[in-house]
Amino acid sequence: MFEWYQRYNHLAEDIKSLITKESEILIVGCGSSRMGEELYDEGYQLCTNLDSCSVIIRHLQEKYKDKNPTFRFQEGDVRAMEFPSDHFDLVIDKALFDSLQCGESAPKNTHKALSEISRVTKPGGVYFMVSFLPGPALATQLDKPEYHWTVSHSKIAKPYLANKLTLNPEDKNTPKEHTVVVAKKKETVMEEGEENK
Ligand SMILES: C[S@@+](CC[C@H](N)C(=O)[O-])C[C@H]1O[C@@H](n2cnc3c(N)ncnc32)[C@H](O)[C@@H]1O
Image (cartoon, rainbow, N blue to C red):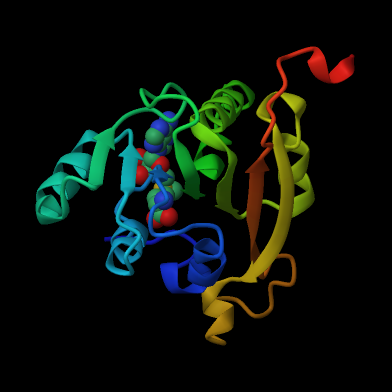
């Protein structure tokens, strides 16, 4: 198991303030993170985990088969998801958006992913993202009319700094925080063009 950026316990209070035990949760690019399991163990049990890696998904389906059917693992591409529109109360993305930022097709891939995440989120629901990118740069990418989000961002200390174990204390250019983005989908979603009328 490997955990990118932040463990559940560092984010738990923020996440739990956004949901109830009846909330439908989607974790995109779940990898082998324990985020879903820890949410489940705290009673947030309607949780779908999506990843494009078939090996990870098969492994996790077997590992967590006792938590079925509400704790689900599905192989799939965040850029073209099979879930219905307006379905999830919360979509969690820890380090997936960042991995889509790599390569020549990054603008196209991130746009497809953000469009899909917005589509599957209920009006009033939230896209919760943890990233190594600075908050203002993320807000510029997310705060677009086509995604229908109200975007806010904050910083969270990188865990090794919180534990006072700096990898390279001399390196003043390395950001000491990750960014947490909360993008709340507007209750009333206007069709394209309507917003300019
Ligand atoms: C950097 S890892 C983060 C894993 C996990 N969220 C964590 O915090 O430890 C990114 C994950 O996204 C998955 N991934 C990459 N591109 C994807 C895509 N287009 N659709 C779904 N998952 C994808 C990868 O297989 C990988 O498991």
